[in-house]
Length: 368
Image (cartoon, rainbow, N blue to C red):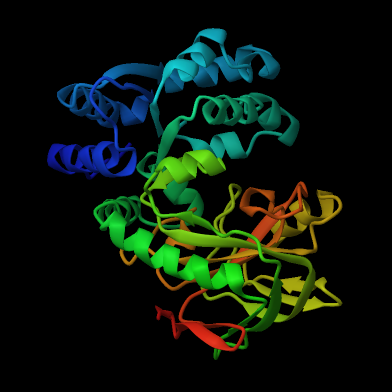
């Protein structure tokens, strides 16, 4: 990994995560999971945790060995969680995951059945983490690798620097803004999103509790099942009424699903479903995934408001850019909705105007 970070950067952010995000305490048990390219970060987390009197276990996956295993072993065998790891989760208080593998585009390019088998452990991990009341954090810097940057068409240096800047943001400020927005969204009924680029969309809310991802994992998050955050972080999500949508969304931000960027997206909703769509580039991959998906793919799913003022270049975190509104279709169960569709996609609009029941929440991209 062509890493531009310094030991000082790493130490500072590790302290932020342990003290302010996960709020680890002396005598607690921490697991750090790392891949080869993130070992400097993993070692810094271990050292900082020990300074805090936290008992720490490091789980390590070697990149080269993983890919040799993918070629030589049955995917189902690699997609099972070892019992000792499940036992460790059951006894842990906090967990830091340093994203891997480094070559995530290679993983995303595998045939869908093989990819699903290799990652089949994911659901069981989250079940075990919720049962253990684990406070978890996914470190997004692990995804800012040269292979991923080439796939997304961004500079790996700019990507890493954006994540580092966004990781230094005051989490209490994000929490305060998130709580204020969530309160308005919880009570609202009708949402209207507009922009001079032609965006004019109306959605209905369903009195569902918004999900706040402010980078802090507190007791309320653990209780509600939102016990794993991303770092950096910063967004409020709400599941909308799946049976109500009309109008148009014109994206002015790139969407970054796993198989490559989607640029210049335009969606038209009619009769409460996605009726037309087009993209300036990347539309073939959207079409392929959309055609393969089943029931619920065309229904409105959620929208989000970004909170983090330092996100600039961050594929996969476009929802965190402050003031940016994401509109999503398909699966929304993770945000308290009813849809468990085997599909999810989104468009991002920065600099937009967002109203709830006629009252402005975001004006020209500024959160009021």
